[in-house]
Image 1: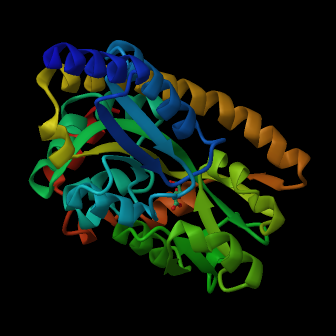
Image 2: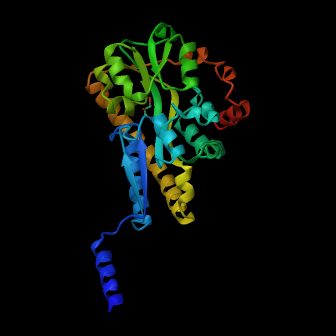
Image 3: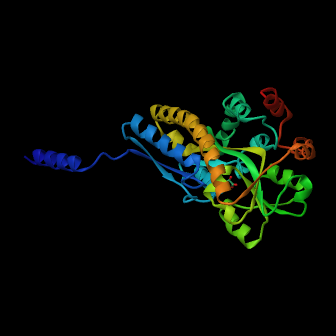
Length: 319
Ligand code: EAX
């Protein structure tokens, strides 16, 4: 009798519960819901949910809700954040080998980028995170970075004395110092206000980031310099990764791969759309001859100790 009662009670409880995901993954990113990375994370979450029959639930936290990019990456190491998609801004502090991809004018075009990042160089670089408590999952895209300012910048001399916000990335900082600007490293969350208050004069970011953050309100000119390719790197907490079953890991890896293609397509589509919208919002868009910028930065790689000549040669050979 007692056993039957317990059994009935157990069944009642079990039936009353909706299916609850066994594994919840908190995934954060540092940009808004209009950025291609957000769409890709939602797509990724859907694929993982379906393929695990609801066993794995990816919760997406946009807008730096889990912290600034650097804080999110630290969270991956501590295990307080499970997944983060971040720019290379803070990443050199965690994996110095990544410095090579931050070199301005390194990649010829997006095909060159994808060949390198989807090939051996890309996987070797992702693997460098392993010893830092991070599992590198995929190379997504932030986009080609362009300059914005309150005036036209057509040649390096126009940057002279300008307070230009860069990411907290030593290669980017060295590049803009070499071009004559005064590089001000800053977390993303402070940029809009600092531009508005005149603490900084200029910044650089992909078109998608410029648009979704309404930078036309504080910057009048967009210079299409495309001076450097900006990846968005999808990273997992190694602690969390190691707690997953091999089957769960392969569902996640496969979905991340599919989401990579989705993300890059979305990035190209939104970039075209947002560029038109930036013009509609009154931004002056300037085509720039980048030759003098390239010339000024020609020997930058040699001055950067974290850039391995061998890696650089392999990237150049894939052009
Ligand atoms: O990840 O900090 C930056 O400039 C990044 O490009 C931006 O936050 C998107």
